[in-house]
Amino acid sequence: MSEGGSLDVWVVLDQNREMFAASTPAARSAPAVVVPQTRWQRVKKRARAMALDTVATLWWVYVVLQLFVVDIRGLIAGRDTASVGFFVIHRVVPLAAICLVLAVFFWGWKGLRRLLYVAFFPVIVLCWKLPPLLLKTRFYRNTVVVMAVMNAALLVGQNLRYHLISKSLGVVALALIISSNPPLIMLGAALVFLLLVWALTRVVMQTFRGRTFVTSQQKLLSLAASTIDQPLQLDVAVQPDGTIPKAQVTRLVTNIQNAAVVNRLLYLWAYKLQQYRESSFILLFNGLSFASFFLGATVALFLLNLAVLRGFPHQYVVQGEPSVIAVLLYALSSLAFADGGGITAAGDLAFLLRILAGVLGPGFLLAVAVNTLMVLRGSREEAELRRTVQDLRRRAQRHEANFRQVVRASVDEACDRLTRLGVGNLLAFVTWLRQTIPPEFMATED
Image 1 (cartoon, one colour):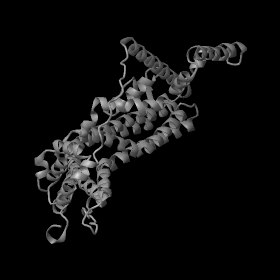
Image 2: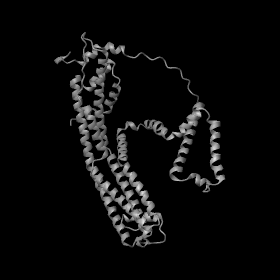
Image 3: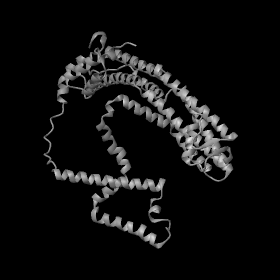
């Protein structure tokens, strides 16, 4: 017992050194001798793997193209799919060839495994091949890049429903515009105009609203606050004979090292968020957002002009039959108050589209300039990130002060003592965290 009737944890741990020594696992037996493969065996194994990956890739490319892009079998065999010759040549013969190859080269359990490999190839790539590749590139060590990827994933998740709805409606509008019915053409044009207004509204709202990444960090911090702000408890029940059970001592060590890990993770979180705030990713994501809107606005103007041109050809003066590239060039040139593609506006509807493009073009440039200036001078997102970093660092400092008061040692001192005692399975991780975070960052007072 120590001063004030409280139990000194280091006295408890020093008195139970022998318990830790007894619980140390025995040395492992020597591993079995493994005969290394020859060079020819390695080359043959790699060639088989590459061939299987090639076959699986070609198969899935064919499946995707056949289902969603183009009828490959129709292009190869022609359109006479009802004849007996088509059925024999393009159904029976390929099936017989596949059965022959399977029976000769892929029979047995190995063949079944290879068939399953080809069938589940996309899942295998995502869950098995891609993670080791990412680990090999060591992007995980650059936490700023990891946070940028997290930001991009959050943006995709937040905007996924919008993109599914808008792009599906865009396809429907395109189908209406290329029809030969004038009312349907104008219905498609109205749908495109509504999508353009929707996109413009979203850009304006996102400019003055908190970013998803900052909001997610604040929500994550609020969820973790219930665990972070709890006082550290190191209660140890002493038995009547004055001894302490082994389970109690083990729990004591676990609580100390877990508290040390939490504290250093808080500092790491704040430090990497500070690095992300000082990087150029904020400006990059803002630029990508405006580039996406510019591309969408250009396509929308192209579809609107195409609809008016198909429904009311007299609204334009055209040199010859305009091509799709000519209409796209005209839509892009109208953003800069110019004609293009040999097309000139000559009616009220065409003039109205020119006015719309004339407002969008300069307005887009002004919005990009203002947004870039706000980011460079310190925008709302940057200020919210700075406040989040300060909040994280304050919580880490309060947590370390509570740790020092209960354990009667700093985090680094406690880890050093546990290391000398030979206990704690997370101390190497804490040491890595200590080397990653600059000491001056942890010492800075907010």
